[in-house]
Length: 149
Image 1 (spheres, one colour):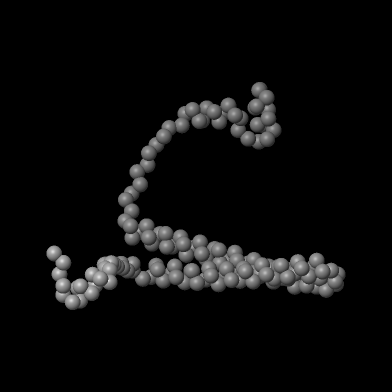
Image 2 (cartoon, helix red, strand yellow):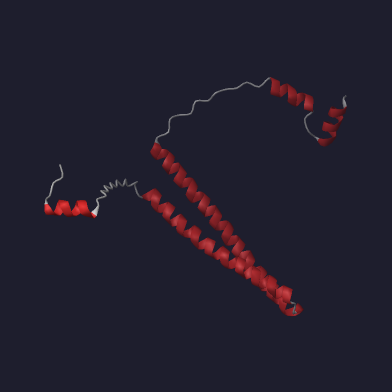
């Protein structure tokens, strides 16, 4: 038994020699993916976005709830110790919680818009901008009906 085998046995992992054998015998297999229509991609992406937003919303909500409990305890500690540093920590924690509440509201509104995007069909907007830049002298000539040859 080699040193590597003894070490891998002690650590409960596969020996390096076995891993090298596996790497040498690997084959590259190409998998053909089925064609996906653009509308399916949009709906999958939209569903993923709403799921991600819901997860983020839950995380922020949990942090806010834990932060509320922490603020209550920190206020009690600050009152008992009468330390300026303790009150500074409390104010910083409150500021952080206010920012988390703003993020929570932003996530909720983004989730609402994402859900509306899923429900409503895509609207195409065609905008045509025709800009014509004319000098004032040319404009006056056009108004008077004078033609330049």
